[in-house]
Length: 602
Image (cartoon, rainbow, N blue to C red; front, side, top):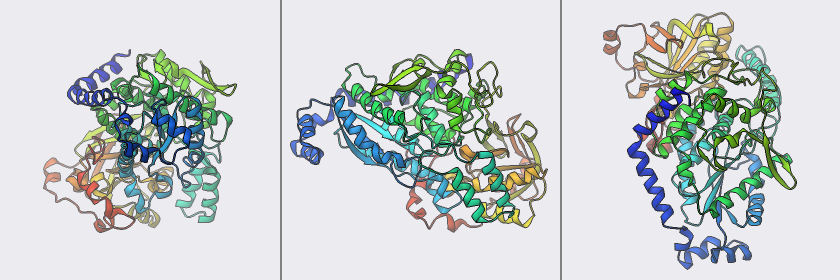
């Protein structure tokens, strides 16, 4: 093992001794109690299988077959989740053929960040993760099940399903993806057209035509944002079948993989020597997930989600762990927004199996882990293929088939993983630099302070931002308004950079997996709502963001900064009402900091 990877893993384990032991004891006690269905009264059980077919009722009554819960995030609006409509029928058939029964236990909400970007609904997005965790727990709370399949792909959905499933860590659980849509319009062209629209050089109809050529059919969006980062991280953690993340929907292999997942969870539910799901998600698995995220240039949202996921398993992870791993994990992939390629090109170049093979070879991953496929991460260097009526696995690529997209550890795109932690008198923040050119990684310029994306865009359109500037957007943290993503700022700030200005973004909000070429210090904590220093910055203050040294400072004396009153947001009432935001008031009051996972549940 690489010394730093080993040290970070040990550090996580040491600080988690008490909480991890308590979690493992809970799942041990739940497992020792035996199959919960056997403890149901006749009335309980009759309700539970009343709508089943007669042969399924007999099997469940006789306790001769394991019963698998299907927890689905299906809806028609998310292109990534629309394929899940037909999964339950296929899973039920495959489970029965494998000696089990499967029931849809519940649905969880699944909102599309692509639809809600820049809209009031985006202020519910992060909290939807915790609603999904709660809904997953409700689905599994009926004590009817011996295992579970979680059907989800996108941004908050997979972390929410995983947090909820970990509350039932005594069961076997597998995740089932749906795969990315085939490639449409190239991401670079899409970004170019968006900037033209931001400059008012094209109209809305032209922009919509371009967007529709990019997001054009069922499947996950093909850029490397949080949704596709979720899938990669799940494989690195050994929580879904190997090589399944980036197989397109509607293909024979995709259908065969779905049935294979159903068969596998039935096998696990019947095993006497089962390693429970909660034990699979240990410190080594979490570190493997972080390493995969860094090596692939994945979403900064996981600096929040993986912390919350770890907590659900009794593990304590912080941003220093990410920073330490990022300093030694090389960047091996160039996928938009960190390059021109999409995830289909990544898959064609060797995909996740090659990434895992290379990182194992360099000692940057823990090989000795339990997975849903058995012991050892080496299983995930294999790629799936059709074999008769089912799926077989063969050795994946041993070298990149496209070095512009994917490389080995001996010739990386960058020596480090690209996610860094910034510290200074403005607080603590995350910055993703894998798509930021070296000459743009240190910016010193006057601040212009806003409290909404709309205000920034108005200022840009007026021409008042045509200068060197560090745009500071305050009161976007979890306690203020649910920590929305601020992607509407990417095109105008990109335009300013292309015009030759030195520009950066500093915010207590998020930018996530689609952050790009403009340096962005995000998730600043303490957030402005809680008295963070961002609320004391004034227009004209010189601010320095330096990703190379890891600093984020207002070049103002500490005495001056402390003496200033806290700046209130200009539109505070708007963050509390409309589009259902008032229903989440309790979440805003209870939510933790970004570094602690930004959850009201933990």
